[in-house]
Image (tube, rainbow, N blue to C red; front, side, top):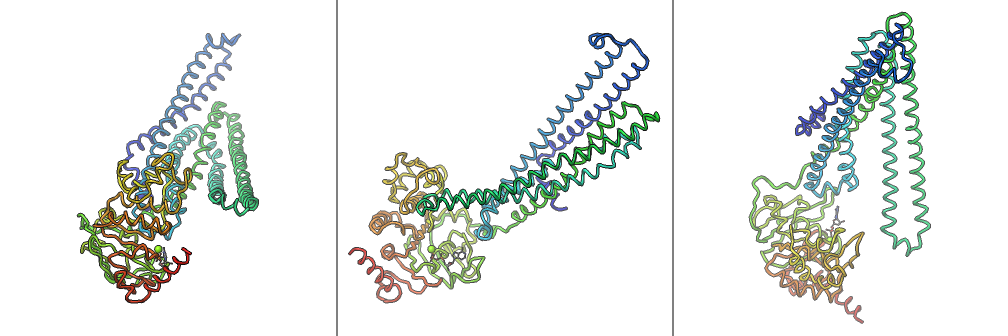
Length: 597
Ligand SMILES: Nc1ncnc2c1ncn2[C@@H]1O[C@H](COP(=O)(O)OP(=O)(O)O)[C@@H](O)[C@H]1O
Ligand SMILES: [Mg+2]
């Protein structure tokens, strides 16, 4: 039961509150059990008074204020009301302590999960869909919360209430108690079974709902495409199909759920019937009083919920454990890319060296990079060219340690990448990925993403350097323009320049552009490069491109093919070699000339 120990670890912080909650709950049950005792006393007293024929009242007013019976009724009623009120107050206090704690723990666990997820390597996200990850952080946490909330609360409730009630019942009459208890295990088993059944079906329905919601989301994201291709009717049908499946599954569950209460009531009825039948015999025999039967009926009613909760709680508990196991699995995922203990944490100058690097993605066997070696001095601008799929993106991803190489080593300022503090390393790198991702936020916030508390001035300067400021100022809300689903959509080129601004605002020592100008036309590219040049001088820069015009001025150009550097040198040197680079160059010149005709 290591899992329970793990689960209880989260409770340490809230130990005091939990104990207080348990006390409240126990006390509330004590008051609850007192109620039938009061009722029995009242009933028996009234019967006695009635039998002895004392001052029979002539009116209700007289009953209430003058007779001996009235005094008894009045005091007993007041005590009864007091007991009920106390029970209510204590129940409220229980929920405020136990359930509130479970919400706090839920909050703690969720934070732990998110913290962990942020540290996990890319490999994890390649192996697990974002949907699964989302489920871990939402549904599984919710189910684990059940342990801290309902499971613990109902367990304490069942134990204390059953303890009190059974004691009282045995005190009244052990034989009748045993008779009354006969149907109760059935209720427990039934509750266990139905909870499991409902859960299984809820899961199926949840999945169907996700599928329905996913369909809807996709449809509306692609609404322009759907209209343009005249697929409205078709999409409508697909949606209706999904919707119909959902309806059918939901109705089936509703049917089972609606059978639950009648069936439970049937079992309760049997129990009550036994009490009246057997109890009646005992009253006739004179072993117990009529008040005892009333008392007993209430006791049996009190037991129903704890007994049903036993089944329900066991089932919930099993699910909590299953969810916890999944969460624990996530928590135990190795943080592959860990900075080692004696981390180096000083200013990075920007000297980069690749030594015989070999790399493959975790989920494939094929080597994507083979024996790659090169050196970039601080402040140098180098370029990497090669066809699509040759390994350019894979190569630069190794520098901010999105992945680690499987062979060879990478040195920054002469120190192995793994020895650098990860924070320091990533802070020093401005990375413009091949695929631009912009958040559904203002354009200003998107640019400021990588720095804390960026000033408006910083944001504007970065935008200006990336040649996107003029575009932004053309928008009505300028830098406050919303992007994404609820805002405007930028053109491909504008997106790329926004991403460049995002990298520049960090003022990094190392800049990496992964085909970051592919969506701008050659003329805009020239303009951007002219302005960037100044910005780039003094920073170590790696520029990836499939377009030679972008990179011909680089200090050194590496031509990469199938994960291997096959040619290197300056633009002129490479042209003189008359190899692959030259072939690529000639082809592009030709294309450009054709385009200009
Ligand atoms: N996440 C990944 N998992 C497995 N293989 C990948 C992944 N990303 C890229 N590859 C493969 O690695 C090779 C190099 O890809 P990439 O580095 O993106 O090339 P480039 O940037 O030069 O176009 C390709 O064969 C590609 O299919
Ligand atoms: Mg690429």
